[in-house]
Figure 1 (tube, helix red, strand yellow):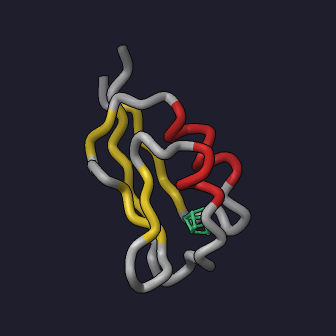
Figure 2 (tube, protein in one colour; figure 1 turned 135 degrees about the vertical axis):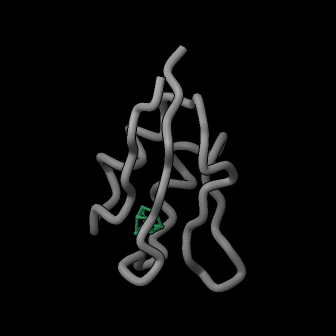
Figure 3 (tube, protein in one colour; figure 1 turned 30 degrees about the vertical axis):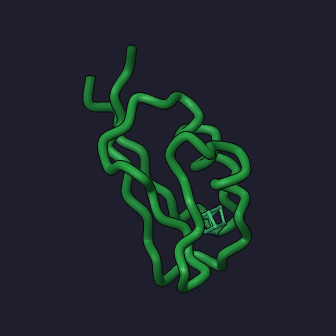
Length: 65
Ligand code: SF4
């Protein structure tokens, strides 16, 4: 199973909620209205879908294993 390093540019996030909707395994909406990964190291494949569907492309996914 792949492992992903997940980072997000909080400044760029517009708080649309798409990532949390596509990949609830690893994305939540924070109290400040911005998205945050539950874990910066995640094996959920849906992280990739979240990154691809982020309208401002502020999610970076790096496959680490
Ligand atoms: S999809 Fe992108 S812009 Fe929308 S909440 Fe997630 S990180 Fe923010």
